[in-house]
Length: 78
Image 1 (tube, rainbow, N blue to C red):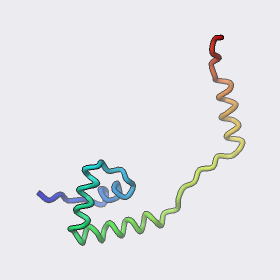
Image 2 (cartoon, rainbow, N blue to C red):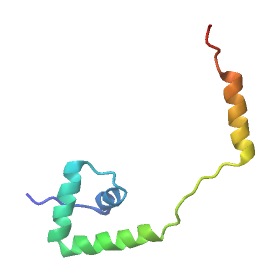
Image 3 (spheres, rainbow, N blue to C red):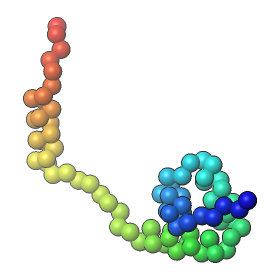
């Protein structure tokens, strides 16, 4: 029985969110199905054009977190 893969499957594959067995099945399908390969290439190109998110909290935010951590820390008995 031939499994049909959707765009959702391919996106999970691109983001490496598939199980090992799904990855193997999609790999095999991509090598056998030209239409699926074309869809994969289109989604991969779109993925590569997305801006990469970078997270840099402000110094004040880090200081607030550290201050809260010190305040909330439970002292260990000696």
